[in-house]
Image 1 (cartoon, one colour):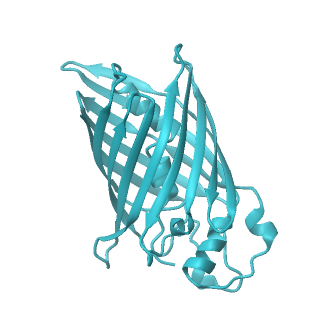
Image 2: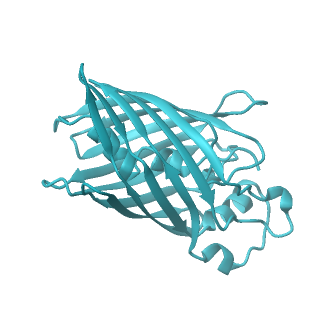
Length: 278
């Protein structure tokens, strides 16, 4: 197996409730009018719910987002991967359209979105088996802890169902000169079925496998993840750093093919980037 890239990297990293709240919290006076945002990000170790291969792959991905107002948005992120032995190469683009909201009392927020990936035909990424994805999350916010629950549907040659739950707490501090620092320690658990893995091996790699239906259809915990998004903002600019530690669970293995097995070791990785709002 070659490069692995996490759906969390695109559909999770920028739309996880905690990170969305942290970014919104760094700009208190968000106006209800069209806006455009550009960012570029680096990820030190691409993974899929903590699953990787034996090669340490990193990624760079620009992100462009247009918001019709503070609720409706669309964005696109081309993905480039590389490691110590290979040069930077284009893997594909992921497009997203969604709706996010916050209640008038600021106690409940939500995010509903649909994702359409456009991968190169010869891309050997697990997500290249996905044809589309839909997801939703709701967060209850209070002064002590924010509680989030969400779910998703992934479409490949089969349909997978996923769920997640987490807690976080946002710390916000304003400095002289209108600088804002937001820190959001978070803990999440992700669960779901793994039909996408079987599709990847059979349809993308052309490797016929005979995994039991119970194995890929079983709804299992996929990973536990702890992260601490840090956002430093001034005006339209944001510097973003997200250290994360993931503990993969129930890692899928191809029967009698150890060469295709995924690595499921606990993993620390870092995502950093810069973003500007127009």
